[in-house]
Structure formats: structure tokens, C-alpha cells
Length: 230
Image (cartoon, one colour):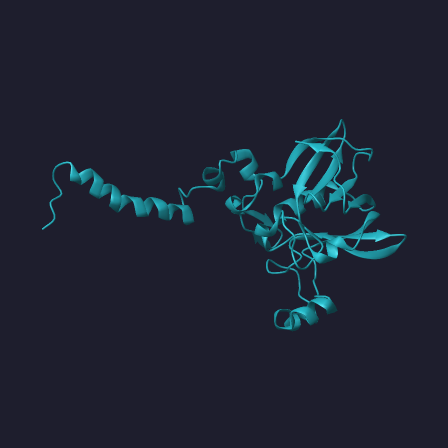
């Protein structure tokens, strides 16, 4: 029979209680938040909390998988571009929405192969909430098992690879096929990915979508980074 008396009792009870405490990280009331787990302040963490968007509930993002430099924040930013311009810097994996007085709202991005196919300036002539998606011919040829079921496209929703929003860039009145869109894989933010264009976390792409208008100028930089200081 186990002896619970003496100095062993507190240690024994601690071993019994520890699994229950750790289980709280998985969810439910009293669960540890991403801010608790990563040291990120609660204000920043709240930007990536669960949110209701139309008929969908966008899940909270586990920030322990995300580089803090990829999280949405206002930074000092030197550029000749006027306020309201979007600057996409694929080298640094950042998108900047230029603001007055030498500031910018900075978002982390993931860069797909299609995101490396355009450089220069364009305008955001079309946008969509919970957009329809269809894999390209190259995507189907490259990974037929993964994409062949979607050759006719996929309606918008939580499982759609374009995420919650898409912004379509045009140059000279023609579609560049360059997209700024959400993602179902937030852990890919800050990295190069095999498909897609410029992806943001869903909470971020919703925020950006709400801040910019049709006709917004977009500058895409592929090789050199703009001068920025956080």
C-alpha cells in the first residue's frame, strides 16, 4: 500500500496534478493562450484570436509556430511611396501598407512560386471575400493526386487555399495573375512555399482587405529589400 504521508505527499500530488495542468494548454476555459506560451504581449495575441466573419468562424492562430517578426505591427518605414501604397518585399517575407509620417503597417507573408513571377507596380482592381479557387494546370500536373479532385474549382470556405480574402492585381488593364490572399496554413508565413502567390494569415488578410480600396497601388520587389526599421 502506498504511503501518502510525510514529505512525499506534496511531490506525489504534484505528479498527479501536472498532467491536468498541461492538458489545459489544449483548450477550454483556463487554457494557456498563445501569448502565455510565446511571451508575445496580449494586445498582439488578440489580433490573432478566433473571429466570426460572415458565416464562418476563423480559428485562433497558434502563435508558437510563428516568428514574432511576422506578426502585424506598425513600424518605422522609409520609402518614397505615398501613404496607402502596398509594398510587397518577397525577400524579407513582408508586406507593408505605407502610412503617413514615416510609418507602415507590416504583415508577415508566405511566398509561393506564383508570387515570384511578377515584379514592378500594379493596381488592386478586384477583391473577393471567401474567394473561389481553382488549381492551375501546372499545379495539377505537378501534384495530380493532391489537386485533380479540384480541377473544377472549390467554393470559398475555411478549407479553401485562398483563405478568407483575395486581392487581384492588374497592370495596364490586364490581370497579372498575381494574388494577395489568405491561407489555411499559417505556419508557412515567413517561408517560401510551393504554390500560391502572396499569402497572409487570415486575420491579417482581413485586416489588410478592410484598409485598402480598389485601385490601390501595389509595388512588388523581388530582389532587394526596402529600408525598414522596426
